[in-house]
Amino acid sequence: MRLVVSHKVHQAIDNFYDAAILRHWHTLSYETVEQKKNRLYDGLESLEDYAPIFPKARLKKEWIDAGWQEFICEDFHFAYECTQDSHGEDLVIIHDAVHSLLYH
Image (cartoon, rainbow, N blue to C red; front, top):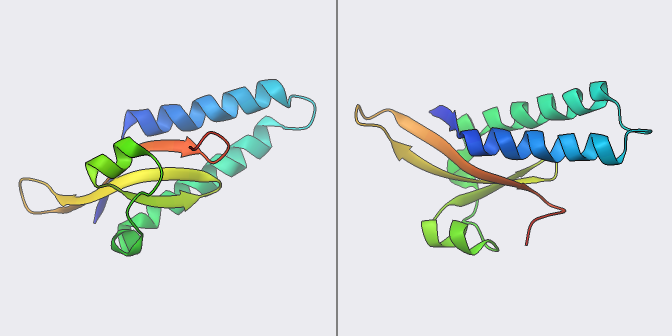
């Protein structure tokens, strides 16, 4: 399976950590944020192998309506779908992301 991460997901991650650094500048270093982001993207890569086992989204209406599955990693919730491209290659497309502090 090939992983495709939408620009919206990258932006959500960057926006969250940019705000966290501004708010917690005295205790949160750039190095710590980079380590968190690296762990997060490593977790996303695991979807290449395990995407089919995670449940359908349960709380965000737009995710439920789209029929997307949900994966949680490093306190982020990710909405994704398993599909195939026009050549029959299996894809995991991550459409959206939100931190658990903002998830409702």
